[in-house]
Length: 73
Image 1 (spheres, rainbow, N blue to C red):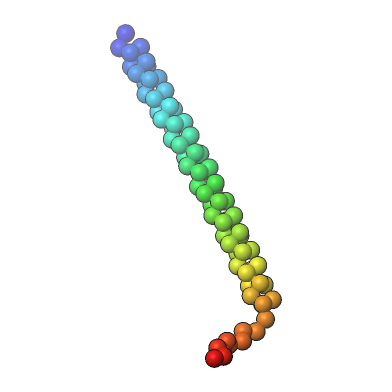
Image 2 (tube, rainbow, N blue to C red):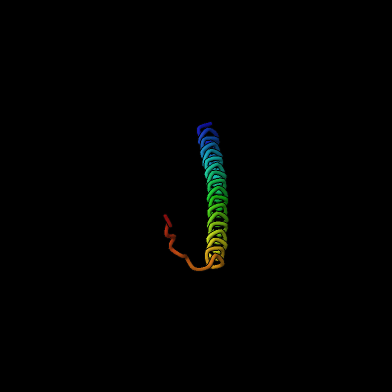
């Protein structure tokens, strides 16, 4: 009788350990996916900002030379 209870207890411990293991794996996977999504968003923002800077530099170069304004009275 004692041996059966001990075996049931061991099986219960193994079951709890497996549940905990898979729960931790699930949380790790979710965290990794969130970090990957965040990195992709940051990279997209950086590339869009770089393209905006490049287009604004082209516009500045197309404007020509600055001539100082003098007011005539």
